[in-house]
Image 1: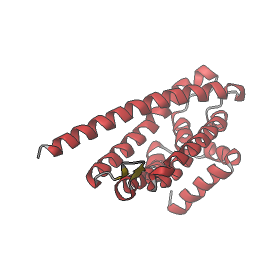
Image 2: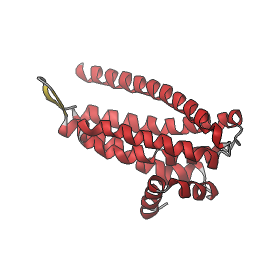
Image 3: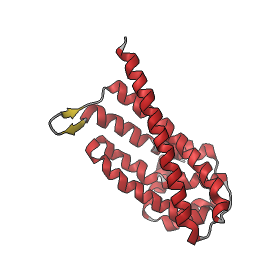
Image 4: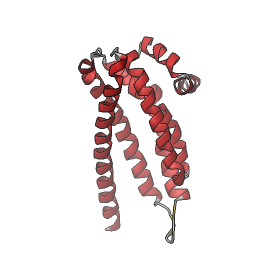
Length: 201
């Protein structure tokens, strides 16, 4: 997928998801194409912008002032978050696929991956707000819109009855939150160990 097609897909899934999901469902693709041609590109936005935001602009706190993360630490955090975020996308797709029969849907690994990759689009695009860390909270709104995209995309891609999409979505969200908490703990531990190691040399 070239840049023009990526932009077109991102625009369509955000602005007209009800017409875009059926098109996505009908497309023939594979895991490699979804990751290399879309996910890896858009997921880089929050990673790069977050790194620049925390190291260049910093976070302003009352009394303390502006705190900037050392560029090396920011880079390490950015790379770790990028790698783990892509891994999380794949794991969540496995969860979506595994849960399909529970909600009378049809298992299809590629469709499940399409679903979570394209539903993540608003959050990835909103990652540009990380350039100014204080605006990062606005990314929560984009994340909520991503949940809506997931909700309306489930019956189209996973073929579950529409009335079961709320429960299906809720369970996916719970699994995703647990996964992100685990990733956050791992990233924090690895970054902390790295910082300690640098401090000894």
